[in-house]
Length: 148
Image (tube, rainbow, N blue to C red; front, top):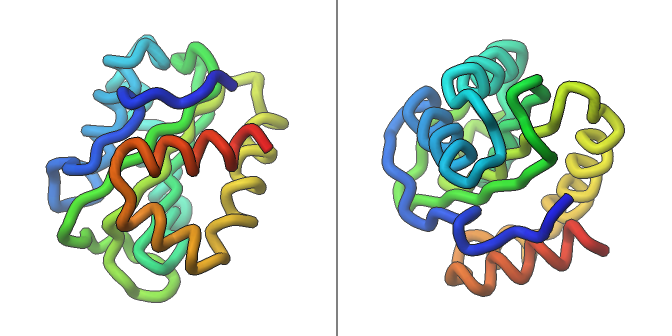
């Protein structure tokens, strides 16, 4: 997976529903050249949410999807001040999203990336850095996490 750049981060994502946030994330992936079809990827993310919420807890969600429209594995990060109801297991509204996209044939990549993130997301200091860091700090944190 290639290193994240500032184009992979939106610290003021717009939207107040699952659909609107996922639509913005799909748009960001499309603008970055990570996917070929924003509507197909949006549907992939929505179908995954329908199976079970990707709300991890502590205000973090990890929407993810595997699709033929994904050009290469990618990670996006988005945050907003006010939380969105994400039906998380802890009932807390989500205000930080780590979005993963994996090509259709990349199951091992998906498991590895999600596993790496989940091991970090159990630590409150990691969560605090995601919630409070500026774009450069979040970028550095995620790149260090995903390449270690």
